[in-house]
Image 1 (cartoon, rainbow, N blue to C red):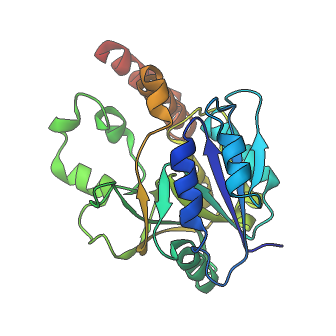
Image 2: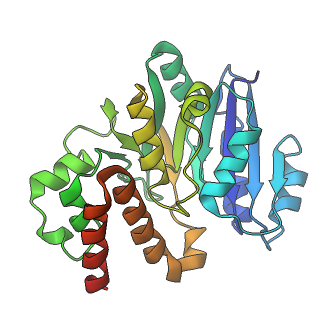
Image 3: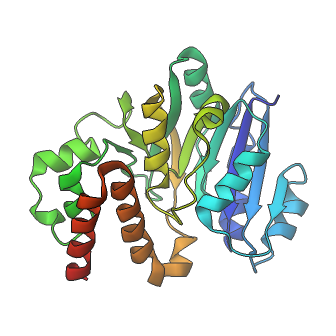
Length: 270
């Protein structure tokens, strides 16, 4: 069995994908690594460019755009690694961050998932560590009410107080770079296909923690996330996908009554 499987879902971002793949070449240190690219029927010659530049990459081209969640599940099913890294194509790994994440998991067998310190293109920190949202945050997060939320609610949810380079147990980490043990995937399954995009990593971490695994924000490992380059191509749907996924999550984990109230609030808000 290979040590690490990196799973990348690509859709019409060939230039960024090639940069991402280049950054991975020295990121795994002493560990063996396979890279799986699931291409969602790109029209920008992505598959041919990857095949030419990186012939060792495992390419899984699709005949249609199957979306982020389904694409990751295709990659997860094909993965042979002891550790599984879901990685966005618009990221670049800094140094040996992949090896650092594996090192941490090797040393801490009770931890099931880990995410790195994520930087924006300009080098500033991108918020990528969270607590689970409660019913109150359902109405405040990314709605017109957020500016009116009590600051201590936001500080708790976004975990704003600890410095960026800490190692911290959290509830969930951003899916742009999320490493999980294969044993976790075997136990709890892959991403919930009911989500198209957004909230899928929150759901996955929620299920991992419910199964007894810890989730860690590893501030000493870094990646750059250029942010949303695939979803920019579906900008008109992004907001709808986000709110639909929010409703799915709160219905699943908080019950029908809260989800119904949230749905009514969202319908009245937009």
